[in-house]
Each structure stands twice: as C-alpha cells, then as structure tokens.
Amino acid sequence: MSLKGKTLFITGGSRGIGLAIAVRAARDGANVVIAAKTSEPHPKLPGTIHTAVADIEKAGGKGLGVQCDIREEAQVLAAVEKAVAIFGGIDILVNNASAIQLTGTLACDMKRYDLMNGVNARGTYLTGRSCIPHLKKSRNPHILTLSPPLDLSAKWFAPHVAYTIAKYGMSLCTLAWAEEFRKDGIAANALWPRTTIATAAVNMLGGEAMMKQSRKPDIMADAAHAILCKPSREFTGNFCIDDLVLHAAGVRDFSIYAAVPGATKFLPDFFVPENTPAIPA
Image 1 (spheres, helix red, strand yellow):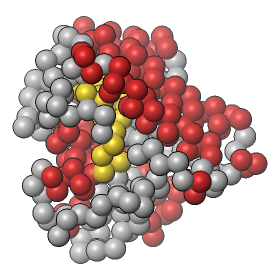
Image 2: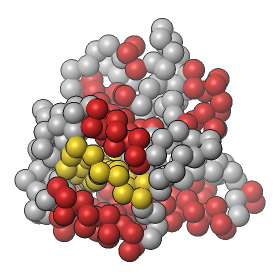
Image 3: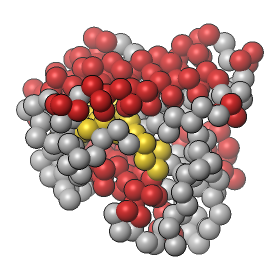
Image 4: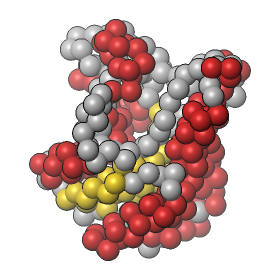
C-alpha cells in the first residue's frame, strides 16, 4: 500500500484536511499538486500554497503549488496542464475545496449561494472534467471527493439548504462518475468524517469548544490513503466514513486521532446517516 511515484491533484489543499492528505501521500514519495487560492498569507487562516509545498517536500514528496480558483475554467485547465507538464500525468484527483455557510434560506443571500455552489458542486465537476482525460492514462486512477453520503432526510436540508445542495452536488458527481467511467477503470469514491475535524473552518464555526470535541485531520488523511491504494477497478462508487475505512484496514486504536489527548466524546458531523454502523468492537 504505497502512493510512491503517483501524482495527486488536490484542490484547496493549503490547509486542513486537504493538506493532511497531501502530506500523508508525500510520506510515500508521491508528487502532490496543490491547487488553491491562497498564495499570500491570510489574516485569519493558516497556510498558503507555498507553505503546503514546503510541508510536502519535508515529508518526502515532490510538491507543486498553483494559485487557482476552481470556479474559473481557464485557471483549472492551466493548473492541470502545468501538473501534467511537470509530473508527466495525473493519477489521483482529490476534490477537497469547499465553501460553507450554515444559514437558512432568508439569511443566505445569492452571493453566498453562488459561492458555495460555484466552489463545491461546479468546482468539483469542472476539476473532474479537466482531470479525467489524464486519469484515463493512469494505471490505477482514483477520484476521491470529500463529500457526504446521499441521505435525503429533511433535517439535513431545512437548517442550511444552500450548503446542503452544494455538498450533495459533489456527492452526485461521485455517484455519476463511478458508473460513467467504470469501463475506463477510474474509481470515484466519496469520503466523509463521522465526527467534526479540528480545522480552521471548524474553529470559525464553533470555536475552541468544538475543536476540543473533534478529531485530527490525520484520520481523514489515513482513510484517504487506504482508499487511494486500492485497485481502482475493484473499489468504486462508495460513500465512505473515515473510521469505518480505517477499521476495515486494520486500525483498532482510534485514540491517536483525538484533537485533545484522552478525549473520548466527539461531536458528530453533519450528514452522517442514522443507520451508519458503529465501529465494530
């Protein structure tokens, strides 16, 4: 199980879960392209495409940072072509970039609606469409999208319908691509956390209290690694939950993923269906 020599194209990977996935792949000796907007330091959020590349190379991989707004077709196509020119192809696409605002209909104006759907649903579609011709040339191509299982319970729509539409748009791409590109051997899977993850976004939403009841991004990175190492023709069309993926891969000690050492109670993330199995004892 190694990603050595593979080339990953990760959207929005300058921080958080995307960066954790990048660094985990880099530890195998992978090439990692970070396509994200942040080139200069953000006043409130850590990390840039340049610091991400430094982390990737420190971990043992080769990095390329490309400033890219995934809502803009020309920028995405240019980023993909640059990745191919430097690394010779693309083996894995990780759709990580996402925008969030958890407000109801009357509190979510059209500018914010367009931002979330432009980044999440449209950005995922555009990046997938741009990378798939190159993925077809890979020996074990994967698309991994960080989006939830498709549970149409009203409780996931009523409080923040615009955000839910945007995230489920990403999941619908996964559902479609798994079947559309099955004959090409391209795996399309989705990955979602059972609990909240200690990232800058979660800190902005819930502050320190939520951060202390979250797991580290490493759990998503390790789960992503387990998925991306699978044979693409044998594992596709799945909506995966992080700890279930890792349990199936042999992990039994999940205490290492607690953001606060020793914590045992975590906040459940949005969109996890009620019938999701618990981690087997």
